[in-house]
Length: 395
Image (cartoon, rainbow, N blue to C red):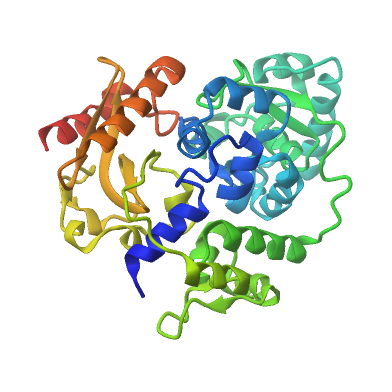
């Protein structure tokens, strides 16, 4: 198998080759897949790299519920297009009982949580409220779980109720300032509940998730889908079995895709000229399969890059610690944004050309003028980013 062709194919399927130019946020996420959200700039960078969308356009789509941040695959939060709201909540439900299990160990009963959930829902009838406003409105319905709860990461019972109400589609989180790259929310009743007309049971929802997945990033392996979905091996096998997937070729039978996609892949030609994209370290190109080695050219495998444990070979990493520069699907460099001087710090593994420098300048301008910063996650600060920036500038 031609690895360069495979990487370029994924790049194309993800819409990073310009084929999503002019798409709406909803269309972009439907094509590229659910965008992991952890209070960072990832969703914005996802849609800018593919469709050139402004922050204002993405925020407007959030406000109008064309896209929304929800618990979904593995119970993790992603930004989803409207047609997938119910599916995302359904596949998140099996992963939603963690806080409840902890609360039970601290002496909280299910009846208490049911009463608390009802009180929370009642408090929201007059409009969205912040967690503090909800706490004031419900009074003693939520209680402190003391030092033992603090040690277990659950200081009060309120997060339990909020989490269960959200995964049940009864309430939703609204970003306080309308932006996805922060973690301050208000909560609102969700009417109509997106799950009300959802007809799939859990097993059927897993099949639909697998269908989405292999459209987003096929060919992919069963273990890769299992990691993304969080399903057991048995459940993951059951989810992909009805899809009629076929092997990529006889030498790589573990990589599966839809027959019609295979025909398209066989006719696909790797673009002769470079196609660059600057993407988040949490981009779908990486997180859907979490298999970096397939995106690294052989001459860059031993390239030394920064990690929290010191400089390491790029090919030894499971996850990127810095954002990536891609050329037709191949990782050719890394970058970070330095808000102190409003520029990108970057390195490439070969000499950059003018087209790449122009692409870097475009992304730099977008972040500086529209985002203000490019945090990878909510706790990613300029201070914590400094060692990564320093390492990039040294190289």
